Amino acid sequence: MSATHPDPLTPTGCDLTDFQYMELDVRRLRDSKFASTPKGDAFRAGIMLWCAAWHQVPAASLPDDDIELARLSGAGRRWKRIRAEALHGWILCSDGRLYHPLIAEKALRCWRKKEATMRRVIRRLEIQSGEWASLRAATFARDNYRCVYCGAKDCRLEADHVVPVSAGGPSVLANLATACKPCNRAKGRKPLSEWVQ
Image 1 (cartoon, rainbow, N blue to C red):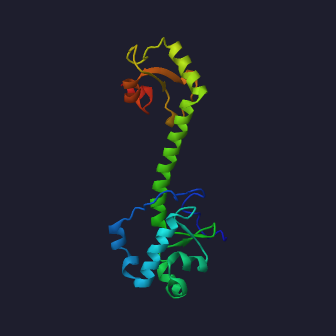
Image 2 (image 1 turned 180 degrees about the vertical axis):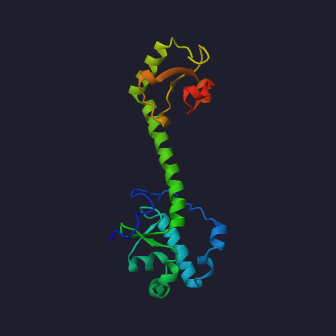
Image 3 (image 1 turned 90 degrees about the vertical axis):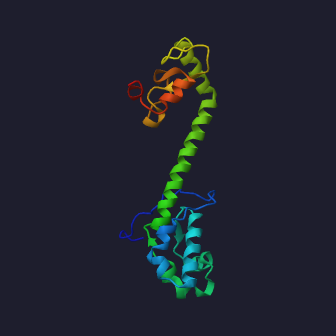
């Protein structure tokens, strides 16, 4: 593709095929040029392309292929006649695919949520692994099985990341502290200096 085309509007691996619903900003659609310009067939085809793009990979994109666009839009043989109106707002990007900025905006929001969920799942798996269990045990023993923040003992203890994982804190003994569940929840992702103030 030519260097004059912009970069793709969503990352290469942006996969929302497991997201059944796409947010529809009713006011933006209602007040848009797209809602007032295309006639019935073109408008319907355009909306169908929005829906199809949601489950393409990367999300918010479509192949720049008229045969495939005619199929995805449901326009069939009418496609060439309504193409320009149905593709209102779509941009050809440097990867050779068409992207819609509004759909990309919605897709990126969902993709970030999906990535955050995956990070939490991976973190949970790490917590349940033997290595994490060993680190927790070593942290509790070092801190005499007592919460370093409030001094509580004989309660549910957790290993707190002094420098939070979200701030780049590693899962190493030097960055772990024994905390009771209430203290660990209260501190959350805050750095220790911010939490103790």
